[in-house]
Image (cartoon, rainbow, N blue to C red; front, side):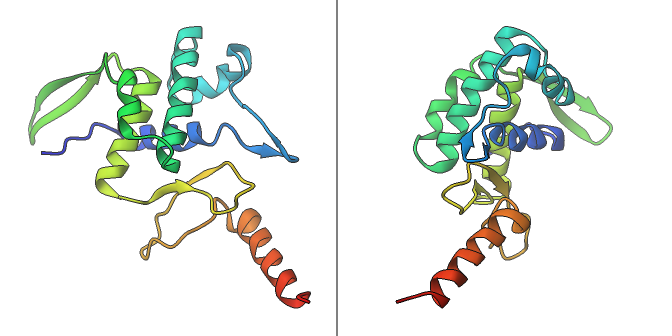
Length: 168
């Protein structure tokens, strides 16, 4: 039985975390370089603003990016799950499973697993090789390729058009 314990906020945390290493003006940038810079981002995602939490989250980001790109196996994510505990809660409609003391890193990993189960292949890197962002493809045919059609999609289409019209 597959069991996943992630919410929509955890899914947003996952995608936003994966996308904290964008290329800006041709330079790879870390949007979570230190606690002072990351404090607002952490608060927006309901993650405790501590040095340990940030270090754990940045380490999880690196592993999650590698797993999504296919460079690492999911077993690399185990260290972020070691302290996760699920607690059953009886409700009017049945049993709900709730996380206790889950770190931001654990929430992101569990959100990745939830997407793996419910939407296999929908979380992926942008098809633009110069881009470091990720996307969750919510289209029915599952054919989205770029993090943003307006940015990466337009650039890639313009390059293809240029090559086609300026071929020797």
